[in-house]
Amino acid sequence: MIPLQNAHIGRPYRIAAVHHSAEMPDCERQLNELGFMPGEQIVLLRRTMPGADPLVVRIGSSTFALRAAEAACIDIITESDDE
Image (cartoon, rainbow, N blue to C red; front, side, top):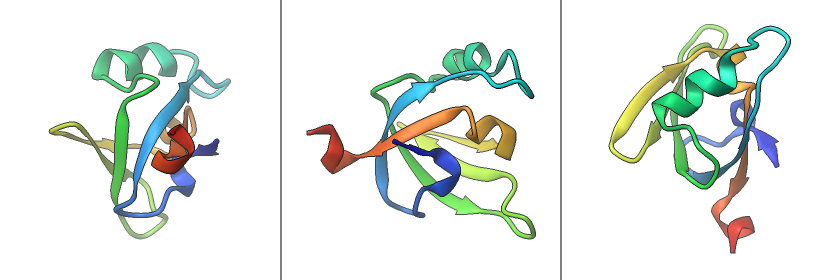
């Protein structure tokens, strides 16, 4: 598993886990309500500059901009690791 912020742009991943952090205690609940659930496919579309915050990601047909603190709550695996 790797954190979402370490993903390669354009490569498909699966969400392995969504968790909260000390910085964002409601992060898990908020992300789950938006559809960030274990098993869902996710693709990093781009990092904005400067600082690479926010990250632009796609789940299904929905596109989201996530702050780095939110992205840190999402662990992903590569599609090949999922098999």
